[in-house]
Image (cartoon, rainbow over all chains, first blue to last red; front, side):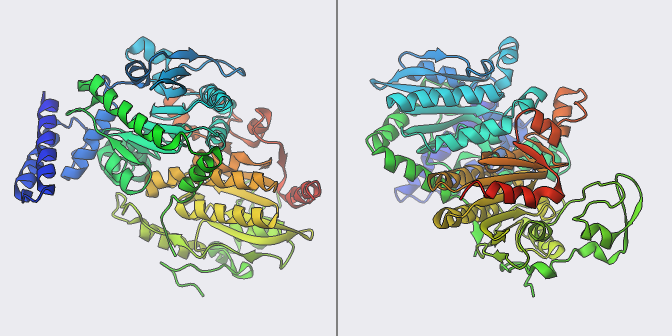
Length: 320
Length: 281
């Protein structure tokens, strides 16, 4: 399967880059491999529209990896990383939304609260979990459990993997926009550490509503965007099939987001993507969580929340 | 007056005429009657024949709400950059799009922030203009809203946001999404300073803005005829492949589902604000 070949090539390029940082001139060799990789990706791309540049192919490849049906989901990481996850249900107002899982767990010898958007592995589970697209009650359950965390001084981990909040009548009737706004706002108030990780798809408002934190991490092949590439293509390029082009234009991959200051760190995935070796992906994630939690957990709450607000206050690019 | 393209420029309210005002007559989209345009403008852009609302530009909105001569533009002198180097299908760059919007509206940005008085009471007004790329929120709007809220918090003056927006601005990608968090972070400072925030949702207030700052008011009003929601009607229809209720995402829908405190007629908005402001002295 070409995915493995691609992964192998990627690894080689990475190794060469590493070597060239130590003073070896390998630019030519790297360029050669990159060209090969681009050609391979192009052949591998099953996208309906013909992709143009190698960069475009590569970004679209990442989108596909982020949505890969075998990719580890929130519950997979929780099981692999946390010691004892005790799931809590319901928003106490309307119902329970299985597109968001939330609960208490043990991580690195302490109790924490973990919240994640959750996709289904098969058709039946996807129906139950609404393909990972939460309703307002999901976000309100998330907020309820995050407030529980604050009450007891537990750190919060959020795992984001959603195409977006659900576009439906019930969601609108129960004010999905208001629920997202409330979460974003309240997360600036929570006086405990919040570590956000984009593990798959970071879909727009449905993602940022769990995305306010002291650290924002992102798995190597995850994406994070204001709109899906398909949605952007349909509106701005007047053709949803131009999604690969839109994916490129939106700069939704981890390296771009790091450059824009939106995320703090890229967590490396096993060659070829997290789905090829979930335990290894989980281990890398766990180590990063440990490191970042250690860095923020002893900060006074006052400093924590003011730094969190400052961090997001500073985001944006404009001209004087 | 304006150097179009890069630099910021202030708006002179009395010179902020509409570009399409050369035509003397217009046809009302609701009653199909031919109406004298000047009469429509004088009537707060409401059809004199049938009462249909036409949209208001940001300068018109300010003139409707603020005491005459009291408005002072205090926007930060910034304009949109093109952080992603975004080019659309027709080869138009985002920079070109901004430039065109500036020329068409006579505004530097999609939002104007200023000091004003309403029945003598000082307020900070932040007003969106839908003509300017759908009043969409990118880095500039996020910054201007924060700027306005910070001044309001510092001076303990009520903050009034009037939304007319399709949501986040795609051309700035993730940075637009981040404005939802940025404005919400600043909203917290208003609350800490005990400064009231009145959010007025007009036609339309949707997506990224409805899902952040517009929904965080102490008091939330819908202007009559407003469209309020997160996901656009068309997208929901495509997803569900079924017809939506007639009143879906209308002012009435928002009121009946508890999304807004009140629905207010355009001609009563100023009086409504005067009444509300009296409670917060």
